[in-house]
Image (cartoon, rainbow, N blue to C red; front, side):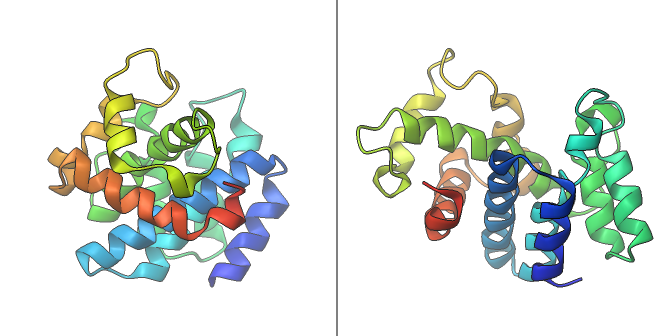
Length: 184
């Protein structure tokens, strides 16, 4: 599957524009992490684009989320490593991480929401004005962006060997590159 096919499938299965933007952002962050780790950038981007492919179908049944998506992708012949990462990213299942892609998707997923929340408190409402320092400072505020799981994000050190600052810098740079696509 190529990126345009993945994007078409995502738009077919997901009607929520914010969720589509989230998947684009996760795809961009994973592609940037793939560059950092000298991995397959396109494969990692596809994993990010497709990781919530079943979200609309499973939103009222979170214990099914990612299992249905992974099965759907397997049936479409999507790379097994992508299917595994999609399945493992929902921690409710307790599926052990097998690859660095699994780990990268898991920690990147909540990061996008944190960035979006940080953008919306800037006077400009532009991601171009957001800095790693802004994010680090906001990260310390427990009441800020409560929906973004900080414990998962902080596992970047344990799972990827990246400090929080390095992880944020890579992720923020990736989202800035696609700011027009995601409306930030």
